[in-house]
Image (tube, rainbow, N blue to C red; front, side, top):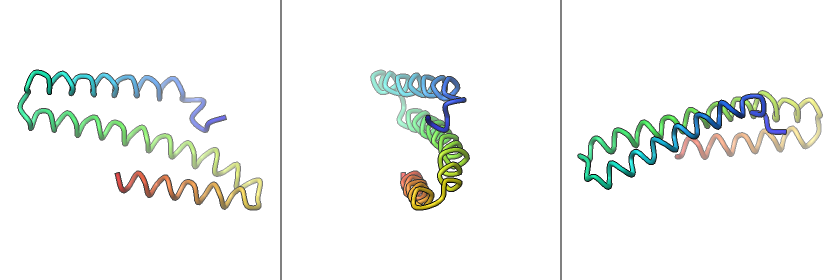
Length: 93
């Protein structure tokens, strides 16, 4: 079970709002909205996605990684490496 299972509905609601933001940006481009205004909305959508990503990472660390470490052995080390790689991808994006 995913670490965010208990917050799944809230995560989905946030993602739907972000989806609406992106549709709004698409509409702005279709209407030839001023570039800076479009960029401002893109920055807001990006920040919203980053916020969801951080929440999911927090849940992953609190549940999946913690449980794997408690099991011991290679599983814990694998989960830590997986989380580190995910953090690196988020930082580079």
